[in-house]
Length: 514
Image (spheres, rainbow, N blue to C red):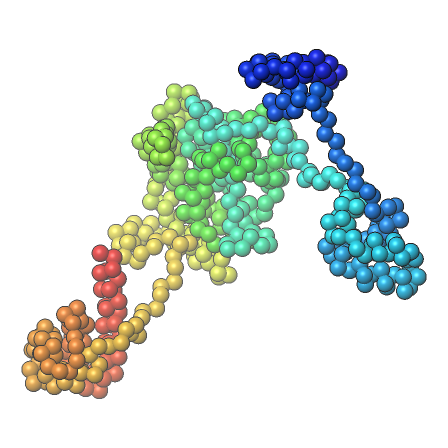
């Protein structure tokens, strides 16, 4: 409805509305508001006055004219385009300095108006000038052209996929700080079977990534059909895009900041790469070569002899998610049980599996880890030992030394020989010592009862273990006196006390754990 029609309708209805009773006014008002689209309160005002209400903003008197604005621009430029609040504080000093040196000549009226201008008014008057000077549009970051071309693939798009579609990711070996040049690991994981390949790269470079993918294609037991990467610039580039087009590979990417879209390869980053190498820093060609030799043994050991879980499905019940997994199987067995995997490829995998020795592969992995640890510490790698029988015999007792992986082994902490608490029996020990000399077979429990019955101090039943340890150290020293003589025993007294303190600490830790 046009504005002219609304005005004519208002004039025709307003007289009838003002003369009607309350009930009739309600009916007229409902029809008028429905036809014109006016708000009900606005319609009441219009019908009461008989003409549409047009609200206009009153234009106030303009205080700051062109001369003041021109002077403000000059002063703002002389102040190096600072903000209004800072310019307001600088204005008296800057105007005086510019007038003193002859750069500015202002009339008294203009000068007074310029100095009384508030910071908000300064910003408002300079808004158009700032827009022309700095530009009103924010500069957008350049969008990667390849990222627009590569299709997005989420975690829900991998149902019933054939072997050959692999997720790709880069793992850095930079240590605690990603500074300088360091070694990277390119990880490729087949979504259908979990078959994983790792390639060591001396630097993060797109041409090396393409060469690594070419090397992986040669030794895969299935044809490579597609690659799914993240949004890293090492993958979103023309080099990899052209290679995928040339080899007829499906090239997809995950969503930004959604690691679950690449859940298969993210799992292998921790279960394989970090488990083998850890989080230390590796740099240089020597470390890259040692890492490559380690991956040559680990790829066979992991893909043929390491079962892994594969998610079958999950159900959400409120905030709780229930996950259902297939039975753990090796990637080799998963490929072997698939109907879409060729029979000749199954036979080749079976022949390769029968020739592999898992213990020998594990020994090669341990030797590779030793070499990596030595290179990280700038040492010469130890010579490789071909004595497989010695390695097999060490498997039965390897658990005694704790962490068996050299890349994850930590330096042992020194034993604690000092006391962390004050000895409660230090002051009464001469009395206890006299009791022991009179009756060497006196038990600590009886000594504590005698102490509690006397006035030597207040001792609780919970201090029995502390007294028992002190008595045991004394009896050990007496036994050494009898066997080795008093001089040797005195020299070993401190060591015996250190052992006692260590035993106290271990027993306290065990008690706290329980």
